[in-house]
Length: 408
Ligand SMILES: *[C@@H]1O[C@H](CO)[C@@H](O)[C@H](O)[C@H]1NC(C)=O
Ligand SMILES: *[C@@H]1O[C@H](CO)[C@@H](O)[C@H](O)[C@H]1NC(C)=O
Image (tube, rainbow, N blue to C red; front, side, top):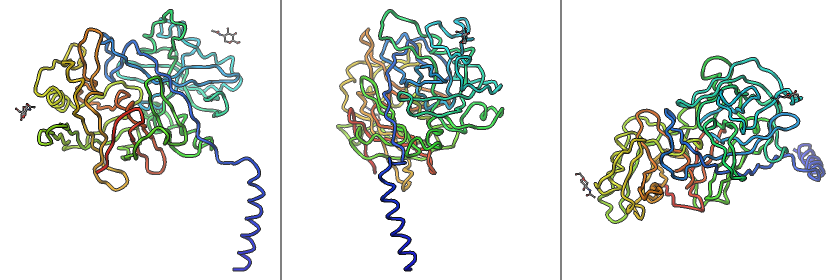
């Protein structure tokens, strides 16, 4: 006992001495997320020309690749796991307009060839190229990973290729994608063509560059914030509800059901409970919410009080704009990963309706037959935590700019 005691004192003295040095525990990284208006919106499954001139946007983050650094603006996408940028070999006919930044591997002294094909499909959008390893950094170069696996793309189809340069000097061009998915969701692994590897946020944690195995995303009207390694608690108004991941391939959670909550008449509230497991991707790279067809239809009926709505040629519901002032709300139910109780997040109906320039109003959810997604139009009301720790889970808390949340 006595010896142990002395050791403790010695250790204490040593550690007091050591603490004069800079703390070894890394700090979380706070990065701005840029809202970049998308000229087209991508539904996973099809790209729909944006006849709907509503304000759809992608969230983008600045990253530097290579030595010396070459800078890119990348879509921050929790719906995919590979990070890619256009190669100098990718020409406009290959889907890389000249105004995109192109990565010149010959100019990077830290570039390492991998000789492995990269192919990814985002619905009809896709990218093809080659995997490589190089240094990637964010936040002005202080936070970096050496030897991060990424892909250099020689052929691209989809919203990045379809951008048009405007005369606006402030226009932000999206050059590629930062895949913030999970290691098991990296393309070469999913396709059985190679080993899984760690996407950038996970690499940061494993390299001891961030303090916790999490990142959180919050959005505001003029942009948003990405916190790597911690939870953005300053942006929330209530506690987080957490629910476990369905599997390790992607950021997706089981939704137990939806409730249309009638603010005037509790009895008129309607519950839509799923009888089978219904996973929803939680995807910062998608705009809309994609719901099972029958549910989407029932919600559209409830919102319009059995009134008229039409599914237009783009597969989007058009409704009367009077419902923009609705005080009703929609609850989405999950099983809490903490105690398995039912918890929910709450979305005011008014937030799910947007007005087009021709005075028509649209619902921000779209009926779908197979893939269900909670996209960034919904996530903008929350601070969303993506936790890749021992028990992988996703957490939602109402953001200061919006809304309420309740646990039951
Ligand atoms: C890439 O960099 C090399 C070395 O600096 C240069 O010779 C080449 O012209 C560059 N390629 C392009 C397409 O800019
Ligand atoms: C809508 O129609 C359903 C089924 O006919 C009915 O139960 C419900 O009360 C109606 N709701 C409203 C708001 O009229």
